[in-house]
Image 1 (cartoon, helix red, strand yellow):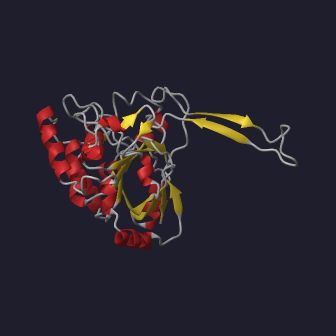
Image 2 (cartoon, helix red, strand yellow):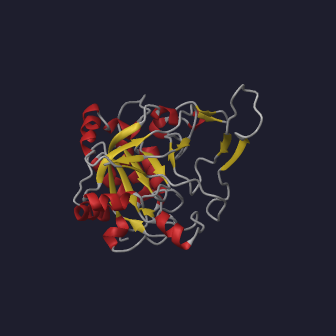
Amino acid sequence: MGDPDLSAADFGALHKRLRGRSRWGADDRRGALNHITPARLAAAAVEVQIGRAVTLAAPLAGSAPDNPEPATRHMKRLPGEPSEVVGLSFAADQLVMNVHGDVDSHIDALCHVSYRETLYNGVAPGAVTSQGAGLLSIDDTRDGIVGRGVLLDIPRLRGARWLEPGDHVSAAELAAAEAAQGVQVGAGDLLFVRVGHRLRRDELGPWDVARSRAGLHPLAMEYLAERKVAALGSDGNSDTAPSAVADVAFPVHALAINAMGLHLIDYLQFEDLVPVCETAGRWSFLCVIAPLRLPGGTGSPVNPIAIL
């Protein structure tokens, strides 16, 4: 809302500005996670005050218009079947998943987006082959992402249940949500922006999100750079469709991952967390994100946990 569409040239200039603010050396592979210093991580522990843990992930979804390649799970063994193991029988299942789908909760690695034939921090796209990513894979987060989480609820700010597909969230709205919720986003924080995507899907049903969804306006990424945010999550994928940028379909992905080295956590759900925050009267919490150990992986299914 309010911010203009950007030309390809304007977007290129924005990408260059944000890339210039993300400097941790030529060999850096962690990107904005460098904002989570030991002191900031230790300070995040004080966010635990009522002893309540809440998931930010959605359950795996079935086939739908927005999920043409659903994750599949099948049982490989049932506990009532005969077993070769003496005295025991086991239940066992197998999961196959398109990590970067448009419904299931996942985190993007820094190898996920190439812009102008370059990955984050000047890494050549050839670092990712048919065998996976040799650099910038999700295994760079193998020690977990732990820090102070902040939830900004934009539908709450607007007095709506959700943002309609195609709506943009501006930097001004992020700042207004801070003021309305009595919280301030700071250096090293894990920022979560609710647009109501998941609630709208649950109540109205799935739709073609590739063509129409709510997200951040590309100019809002300057707000994240100024605040030195360490990671960005949403109940959508943070990008609006249709795109606000000519000839760039996922401008927020390009700015966040490629320019800023910012891991994106996509298609979360905040409906469990919002009432807890409302009751507690606070919108910050300790957050623990533990991607799977997937050497070479371009992302991972994920279940972030907010601890208040």
